Length: 227
Image (cartoon, rainbow, N blue to C red; front, side, top):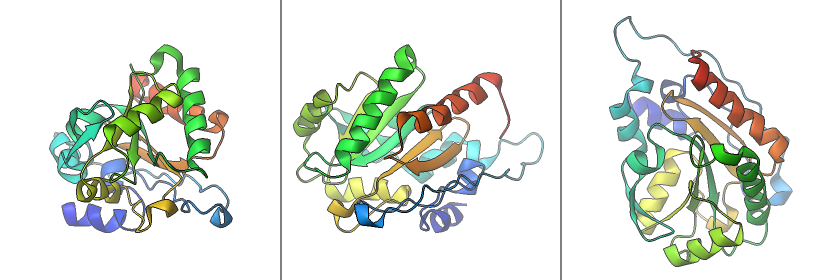
């Protein structure tokens, strides 16, 4: 199981076993000259587990083993176990940023701020943001705190840093690692962790494109819709 998931994510896609479908292909990296058309969302139905058994993609232990409980630090300097504290049971929008970026990151951050505001009181209650720095050697918790305040980040938006090897290990789980952090991914990874629904989208898309994807996950969770 673990080998299969790792193999599929190495191609910059979240696993069918975890996600219940094949999400959008990996988005081009940071360089604006290499930005192509938005990826297509090619979700398909996952095979069903035998009756009486919880599908592995929905098993909390399997999810924890895959995403890992790597210990990182949030913008307040608190220790965060990645799966248990940042992901478990949540609907999350994950982004990859660094505070000295002057190219794509300001676009991503403004989009995230707009989405946060339009979610209203559902943000921090039903939907959460996780922004992982790709430059952990420079982005201390204090730097991330100031960065979040610059974009009016509200409770429910977690910024993560930590030892370089640990941060990189987490980013690799999403197939978004780049050797040169300045060439980092502009991808948003959207997931309903509890129900193992995952997809990817370009982070430079307007909130009007991102919000329906989030609201769809909310509606499907609330209705108990199957994958």
